[in-house]
Image (tube, rainbow, N blue to C red; front, side, top):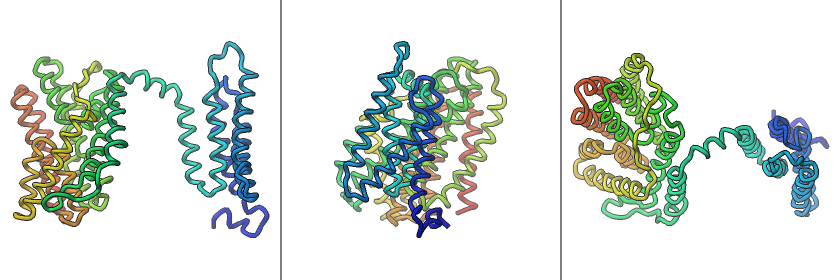
Length: 423
């Protein structure tokens, strides 16, 4: 039974709205109470939230919007006036954050009255988090350099300027190319890569091989493999470290594909996750062995990885994805699933994302069965692993080649065995 049902025929029918507003105000006020410089705490925020609900109720019942707008103006002006009057000269905090938090608290109270309780609670939690982690957020902004900020702006251009103007229609032979869908996949991959790219520069050299391998794999496992293979060849003391980072970066590809698949085609996850999990299990076993032997490496250099949201990088991936889409549709038409598998083996050599997204897209359109899509993705991953083992062979030395090959081929074997057993 819902809480409101207890007061269905009572004058207290709207009490749950005010209780929720009170809880929201207390949550935000609890965080503000910790700050010695703030002029508003538990009671103030609780009263403001309740006032927001009350103003919204009066506005609705009297059909007078000025109740709600006027209440917000009163709260904002009173808060500013109180802060200016009581602010000591030796406190440098302008109080802008507290004023903004009080106005938001008032607005959340109003949202509760209009029935969006879940949204109000979520926003209250997010607001509290932003207020609480002030030091950490300032630290992040200080660690971001111009290149990182440019990356974020470039991603915003890809997402909010280019994507909305593209036509959401199918073009070309086999109606295989949809500009909007192609660019949407560019945005998706760029977003995942950007998160790893920025995080990679935030951690600097302070963290261990596991974190560096994870972040490198989120951005580009191929680039990470190339960089640390070269590093191990030029500096023998980094061989053990390079092995661990390379293996973890390549395992991260499986996690990344699982995340992307959950966004693009959640219906395929029951068939895809066990196959990816098989590769992850065997690959992790081999990686753990080398990680356990790793000792005393604290100063880890960062890999030099290109910005994944640069226009040239985005256009290159978009073009590759469109080409793979076309050839997959063409060869599937003339040769069935074998044609798609051939595309997977060839395209997977350089980029596993393109064939994976192509397979997921065709599955969503009903052009592929789940087992065919999973097989194509698996072949692309295996092909990519073989390519990177060859890359290590030609660039690195014998020591790192065999140790990386064991771990990476164990991942491929796990994927292959899972594919045979499950599909």
